[in-house]
Image (cartoon, rainbow, N blue to C red; front, side):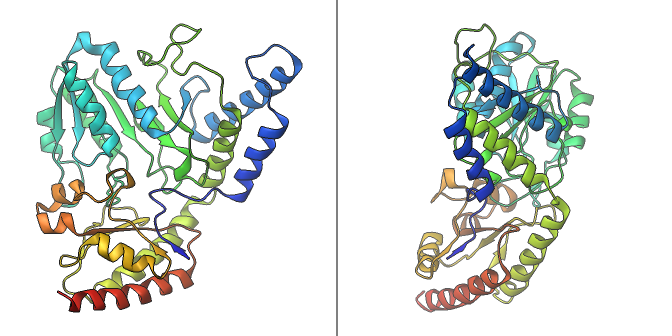
Amino acid sequence: MVYLDYSSTTPVLPEVLDSYNKVTEEYFGNPNSLHSLGIKSRELLDSATKQIAELLNIKETEFVMTSGATEANNMALIGTALTYKRYGNRIAVSKMEHPSIYGICKYLEYIGFTIDLIDVTEEGVIDFDDLRRKVTKDTILVSVCAVNSETGARQPLKTVRQVIRKNNENCILHSDMTQAIGKVNISVNDVDLASMSGHKIYGPKGVGLLYKNKNLVLTPLLYGNHDGELKPGTPALPLIVSFAKALRLALKDLPKKEEVVRKYNEKIVAHLSNYPNIKINSSKYCIPHILNISLMNIKPETFIHALETDEIYVSSNTACASGEPSKSVMNMYKDETRSKTTIRISLSHITLPSEISEFLESFDKHYNELNTLR
């Protein structure tokens, strides 16, 4: 099997799974309980919380554990909108966001907010002239993903924040960092709010995190026994500890891992460049872990299933919009055919050189077969 869909989800590392199993078996007490089993669990929770804070260089009070990035995005956007609506009703988001962001925006429009979409360049980077136009005195929040999930386009968040603050010093910046954390060097301190998910960094599904600058107040979406608590309920201790372990491992030797992936990316690009009808959609501003191409004359679902016969797994675009035209590619190139024929190849430092060779061999075989059937 050759798995090249790491941007959709990653396998759980054995050592992370070991942590999950150990905590499940040995720390089953409720961390909120006052007896010794609860205290034992609370101490482990505090230890995991401290480790996450140290790894992200933030305070222990500046983040809340969630069920994943989608929940974190909801907390960030809706929680901010409800708290700061007295200052304005406009929210700006880039045209390169994950589908979960646009789903939230539909709800915010329904309850009276105005959503402004920020254009991007052909390279997938924020159009700063359009950003300046879209950020007004009534804009309370801007959301720009750190790395696009379809093409891998990386946004210069520090510059984005500077431009926003020049227009409106009180405007809040949120970033979905799901595709960036554990792949490239990035800091949550470059933004006011940041979302991430455990299953993108070789951790379990069902756990994520929302970073929230200490100066911000968010309106809770859920309510429990403590007023103002963003995530009420019993802490999912095995998931939280596993997330801490996965995050620590993901951030270890990051430059070396990135270089391994870059070489894989370059090999694939060089090989596919021999096909005149294949378009490379990932630009020089894209991280090497995500390579987006357009087959132009072959349906992506047909090609994906052809590769699958050789037990090779890629995707068409983000898993949450599978089978649909790529909005990101459309916004970059304004080419409908290009957006409808995308294949996303997502790589990992645990990918083997032999797997790249096997993928390219299978790619050649099926591409040439399907190309002759046109």
